[in-house]
Image 1 (cartoon, rainbow, N blue to C red):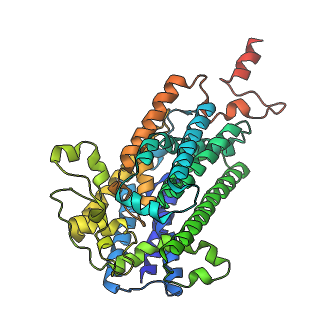
Image 2: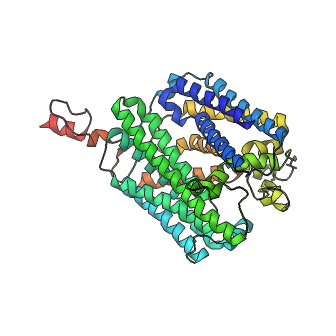
Image 3: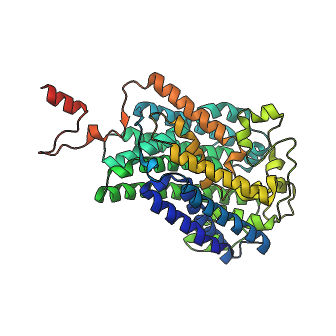
Length: 465
């Protein structure tokens, strides 16, 4: 039944692409559609291999309704804003490559130290994971402030790499190092905390950087150059997904071994496909939990406010209202029911919205979130700093991860704004020589008979002589 949602999801992605062209790669609706298409595909594979313990047609119909509603809302809200307005660029993002390497290296060192202190060099420790779920270790809380440099480093390095792909620049090797440091930092932080979401968040920041760079710059090229840039970007993105699969597979198997548990499906026993079995279970699992948990029980919001949007309340709303931060059983009450199938799984954003506001209230909340996302997409122009793009980046990650959980439930918005703001502040104070992004006008090979680009240092030197 849920496979019927593939039709509105694919149709929404197609209509948004038709309206915005290549700029649609940075549209939240496209991220939502592609994420759920992948999730439904993974769920279908899991179901084929008997990995879904509970089938609940009523719950599937409810999820199908939300997917159709969200897809339609994205298409309709896109009609409220002019299609061409989104393509106007404002200025260039400025990047200092050396500072970028320092940021990526700082995050990597913090993640490496945290991993080694907590696990003693082991790739996975169930004891550390259980401790981290109950209370964050002191060393993790202190190193977190250094690890925050990973988020802007992943975003900016991915943005810069894509720009280099588009304009064929080969003088940004430092950016590659910064990108590698950021991805490695996310992986080791995941090993140190015993989960996979830390690595997934770094990958989401990097993919947001890819998307914004493509969206802002692809209108400047066409033909073979366009194909070449897209090919390289797709290769890097698939490499990130492959790294996520491998990391998830390693930690997943070690978790099962230390917990003494077994997988609910036989998909992991299939040759070759078993290498991505944990990733498939991870992506499709929330669709299975939507059925296994039954109708969402309404939360008592008098003490916490909206749990599914608790991250937004950290910007002063919770203080004014006197709300406390949601705890483990507030976000996942089924963790206290070990007899429940898939009790240790996660819940997609729609399930949590229904638990907060009911079905009708969740429909209204989804519509408002879609309208807010479309507004950000339509009004955000290429920034000179990364902080102005943080709201759009947050909504891209929110919808791209909506099949797994609500990123607005946790402190992700707060840390995103803090990390991007600190990057802009440090970059403004210590960046030294300014290098506009993209910087292809400085590195573009000179061809005889072709004039130098106006406004560059080479052009100024030539005319002065």
